[in-house]
Length: 65
Image (cartoon, rainbow, N blue to C red; front, side, top):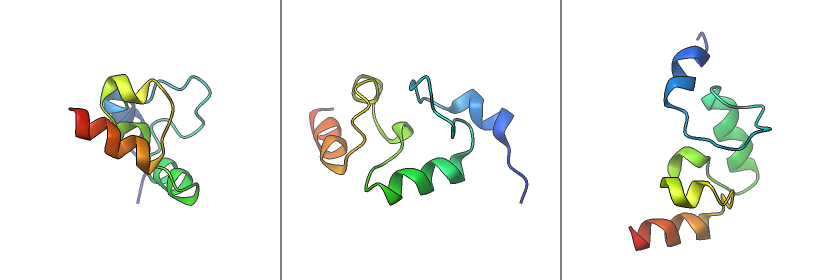
């Protein structure tokens, strides 16, 4: 399967400046799940900007929305 990085970047909501996985969704998801986290695209914009990718932050962010 060919990576669709240019297309993915158009929809990537990650604001972390040093992210090496930006636009490479399979790597991003694997990286975050291995760290017991979720990628930034799973969070609403205000919560994503905190860079807290924990499951707890995910529940809190969507509970308030």
